[in-house]
Length: 352
Ligand SMILES: *[C@@H]1O[C@H](CO)[C@@H](O)[C@H](O)[C@H]1NC(C)=O
Ligand SMILES: *[C@@H]1O[C@H](CO)[C@@H](O)[C@H](O)[C@H]1NC(C)=O
Image (tube, rainbow, N blue to C red; front, top):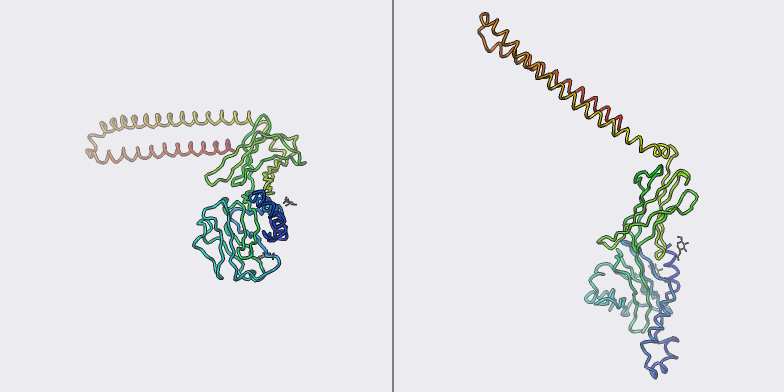
């Protein structure tokens, strides 16, 4: 697409001779009427009308075409690529067989080059690398010695593909969200159904990032009757760019969705029931364990009373009690573990 534009541009961007037919017949009139500026502007305007603007994609390289007609070796000439809205205005200056970098505007440092093999054929096209948004503008290709110039308008566009996600449900319909990050200029967002019909969506949301790029997003609620394929199209007519992404929604999904609200409530209820049940069981087991512990202590005391005469070794008793307690603790822990596992399974079921 861009290549096409460039080809048109290149074949039509011939150098405009300021001493040529355009200006000369008017020169006397011009001096007489003092309309120099006006006519110069008019002639420049004419030369600009020859080609449509060149569109570069952000971050890519682009060639700004400029061809000397009739063909003449430009190697030993002074060549100037400038942009009048900049200060300094020099984008690339070629003098005495090499680039003159001293006057070059900072933002073009290391990003411009001429095609050295092409200079002898009068091709003084400029290669601009890693195009930035700030590179938008009108560039002048000028050869002072021949008093020839031409203009190229550069537009910069940035594009990205949209991403569709499911944003939720709405009364049996499905809410789709489309987002596309990193556009320039600001694009428009459209939703289409499987037959290519426009779907009515809410107003798109546009956010401009610190990098000057736009992020657009749009939501649409779709129903089964719309068909099951939906396309989000993001387009920018000025840079002739379109990106689109489609999503296929199965019929089953709509059926699941249409009963979803009751299902979700059901799920929530059963989930809370399980949680309450778990807490109750936990409290119960703790209570039971404590009771057992007290009982053990009491029974031990009894045993001790009885056995006081038989064994007078407190350490043995201690060890015995400890062992039993340990066993009980382990039992309780096992119980808890089983409960936890049960709950996990229930949770998973619920989630499914
Ligand atoms: C825009 O792009 C389409 C397809 O890529 C192409 O056919 C069309 O000529 C382009 N239009 C312009 C104005 O560049
Ligand atoms: C000038 O040179 C560039 C780089 O090789 C090329 O892309 C372009 O087509 C040339 N222009 C003409 C008018 O031949």
